[in-house]
Image 1 (tube, rainbow, N blue to C red):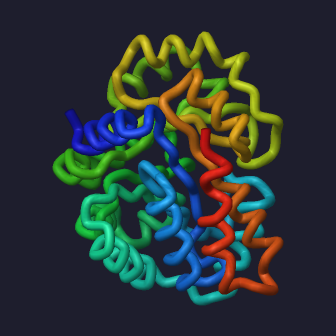
Image 2 (cartoon, helix red, strand yellow):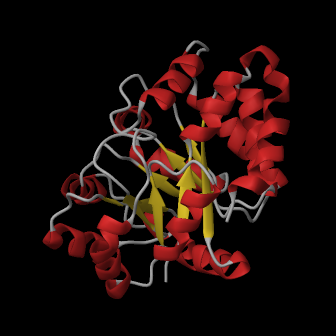
Length: 267
């Protein structure tokens, strides 16, 4: 069993579901990002998904696009991200972090080099939404990633439009967790409703013991509760950046506000 799969299974046993908050690095600045992540870890997160800012975030909706624009007003350096991860890893040495980033950043830094650095600083999973499943297999072979991916999981996404054959291939190769996109579109845009996906969720859960985590559109306790009725856990992201956006005039207080709000957002 992959180490990240085992960690997620263990963390689910602790509270009966997996909670995966998302935060975009650098919104509104790197210091506040660090403090928000600490609040999320201490507030019951199973893993924290840290998004790296990118100019063309094809999977992200308007809220996260604005978050990336605020972040990119600062000079973005991968070295600063790694320094923050190292600091987090020292503070929470057993906590598994997840990085969400777009392909260009991995191509620029070198896939193997970046994955190994991430792993050294407590990252146990990566999500690269603009690399399709077939392209992923090609990159793994070309970049010789077999060894590093035994330690850090490359997470795949399944959507409502994923063909059955492709879904079965993804599930067969999955490690860490499976990211189920709850609707067609981008993040934070539609009313959350998993009932139409019940047959897909049933098929995935029948085919694998790898945890299934639902993302896109979950903003409150009721929606989170619906997610854990059908799947193993849920992702929240846009709602935190809405909180950041509404509190920019008192930015130093944002981590406290998020930490205070978290208990009332969980099932």
